[in-house]
Image (cartoon, rainbow, N blue to C red; front, side, top):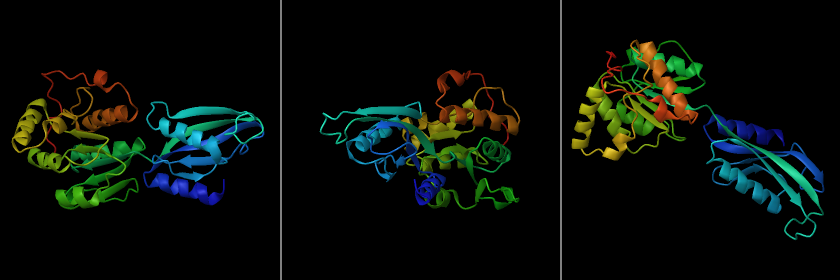
Length: 277
């Protein structure tokens, strides 16, 4: 594969795109291409590079597209070419293709740069996430440069509708300075595509907020999709501990762990009710 194709794949992954890298790892007899030949397949079926074209490439693309919807993100595809098959157009041979799903860093958007928000931003970068930290209070945002954390300071409406990227779908955590602003964030996020949406708050406060939002016309099914109380139930108390519980939940979602078994919340549990300012 020429260098410019590899460079383009890298640049697209860095922008948050995803795809399946298909590499011929073994070939015998007469085959379309030799080992080391690569092709990158995007979710819409478009490709970069080629493994020889024809019906073989068509079948590999079809298998690669199926991989997007599977839990396992690697696969082997082998095919024998029969001289008697007119579709193969090859006088015998066999090829094996290794497929692997590639994408850039997962993106975490944190709405709120209080104690929990800032702790979560740091922990998320340690876990390999790209982080965007928003607050309308510039003085609360980190002043030191960190290339892993993008800082956004604007109105909440402007941030969600103009300045924050939602493609590919990011993980979003709402930890603003108060429940009124949390509610506003939930309303503005209703039609945004997210991989995860979690909102901080004790069970009692979250229940009250939900009732208020339903009364304002927010979809109950949308509210039911929000992870709240946020984080895994580890009896977290300090901002750093709460941030760890939130990050653990996000990793579980990202890695397709059995989240329902991990979220063992009890009705009397009132963590996440700490002061956030």
